[in-house]
Amino acid sequence: MFMKILFLSFGLFVSTSLFSQTVSLVSPANANFLSVRDYCQSANGKEIFITIQSVPENVAQIICIKNNKWEKASLLAFNDSFNYLEPFLTADGKRLFFASNRPREKNQTKAGDFNIWYVKRENVNSEWSDPIFLSDSVNTEEDEFYPSVADNGNIYFTKDSKSGLGKDDIYVSYRFGTGYSKPKLLNQNINSEGYEFNAFISADEKFILYTKYNADGGFGSGDLFVAKKDKDGNWLAAKNLGEAINSSAMEYCPFYDSNEKTLYFTSRRSKVKPQKFSSLRELQKTLLQGENGMSRIYKVKVEID
Image 1 (cartoon, rainbow, N blue to C red):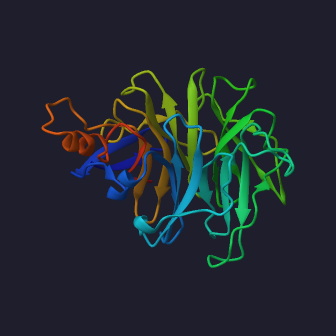
Image 2: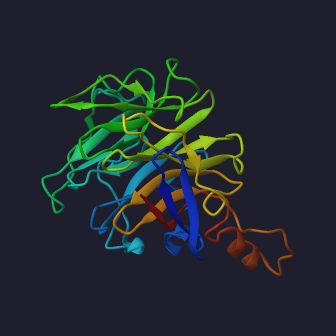
Image 3: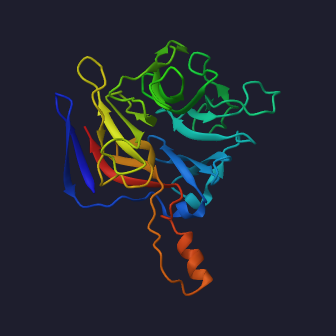
């Protein structure tokens, strides 16, 4: 469903169906991987970064797809025996942020808590650097996840903290020169006593997309929500993106391409139905198809103003 989302001056928005278009897999090649999540892409769309993950989520690695050739996807060189996930590429394509449980010190071999890291390069033809710990201002002894960076350098992320309202909450650290402010909890129009996570911030910080888990009035499990700021820069109440996008399964990890007006997100929805199978081959083919309840990446045309 193509949805146009119009924010009104008093903070609400209206969703209007413009023409029929179903949510679809970003590529049939999703089925080449056991479990995929965390889509982001370069400004020109020529580079895509996603996470490949094991079913119990104890293995996570970041891969790159160039020129939409999913069959030629490559594992990024900085991946090692620790977990790497939730990539976010800056608009200039020179820094790739991500979450990892790699230890802070190079000589350590035991995994640490999850922190935000980044790699950098001179240009798109250069090799990525070794992972760089973001900042002690942002990272703590608690877990930090899912970085998303505005054009001004402000970084939004999920934090599992005792200082929050719930189990997971969304925070921002403001960029000052070469450093960052201490994390600031977003207001109660965004966060709650429940779970809020995986926030995508628009380049100009005018809207935020994220997941609320088991929210009142939701469609089940995790739903994608959107919120905008008022004229004073305060976040207004978030609104559910609706059943054209959300399902009874988990929807999470949003990424919005403002040029193509396309929302990408991860979902665990499934089209596999109970039936009699004529052969083991048919059973395997059915269970391994694209929309099988495993994490898959989807896209839908959505205009957010």
